[in-house]
Length: 237
Image (cartoon, rainbow, N blue to C red; front, top):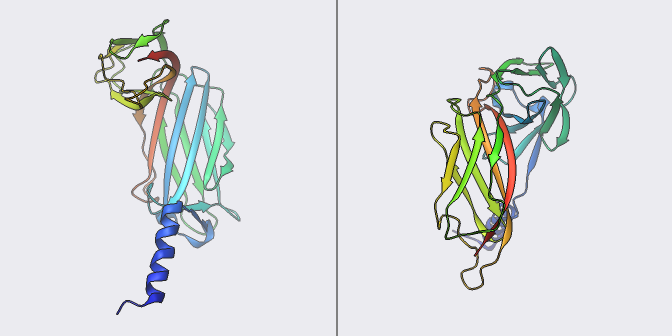
């Protein structure tokens, strides 16, 4: 039998989900095997990399984040330098390195006071590159756009993301890292069909490589290492 009380509790649960509320869990309350680590090393130049670790319970779709406490700590190392990662938000830890060369190895270590450590999170950066070509003049959305970068042919995964206030965000996979990519006429779509506008559009090019995560962590843990370059142009109706 469904009572008013049951319906009220159901309504509160739905409201909580819609609100996107997050929860936290003290690391002392969870075994290492229950922690999912989402690790990202992002180099925006050949001499600067940000390493970010997001710790959750239940995988990257979870809204429960792990707060390290007591003797639990997370650190990162690269190019002979070890840095303790600092909390930047709920369950998010970061470290900065003055290195961004291709094949630089990064290691992330989760030290536990009362449970298994997770020291074997390892990956290497893909080769750096430079953004060579973007349109200098406003480009109508019914014209093709060529984006170029070099060097090319890395063999790593490439992605281009284009985002602006007047267009829908688009992502393009670029197989084979050819050094050039053409966005065909009409692929960038106006957010308004009635009154399309011009706006500055951000272009983010990523070269990505997957690392490995420690077997003591949750199986959904992952480690991605990326070279990222950014530019912009004006998109016109």
